[in-house]
Image 1 (cartoon, one colour):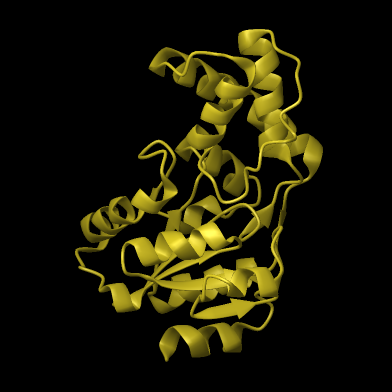
Image 2 (cartoon, helix red, strand yellow):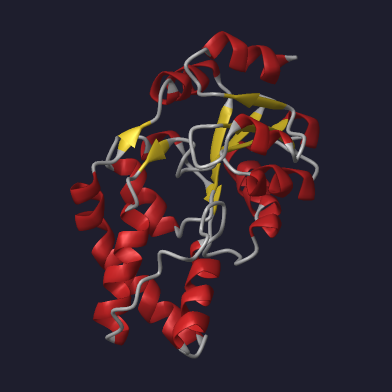
Length: 225
């Protein structure tokens, strides 16, 4: 085993129809009694904790650890209903690609801006959580660019392998995912199944860009090259 694939979730593995933002909106009302909109916050490719900090700033709430914990707990409590209501679906080719990776012995992990409990809720709704025995999450660090080493340490602990940067791939749907990969020397695959077009993703010079993951052979040609 020498190849490690670290996957983003929203816009890459699945689309949640805005369930995460809906759950944050519900939590904002339930926890802080605030009904204002958060639709103007650019959350794509960010961590949940970073998003929460922007919400605190917008509404003048203190960014204390107590408030982060309360907000996170409220968000996680609201997320299952939001996921059920918004209709989460796996993106094209993803489930079969994960199954192929899993069966062939390629190491799979997550590198996501989601809180770990939120990641599990979203992925378990489409039976995808079982593919990912470890990962790096918003719980670890607010700055997405610092999440890579957490994922590598957990990959080493789980598999007993020191994965070389040249064999570690960060896979995501935003320019932030590409920047995150470069921050710890990993390679990057971008996919235009989220909010960014192929041209927009190319700006950060990923190793490859796909429209979606329907063409598995093309994906493996990049990874195995």
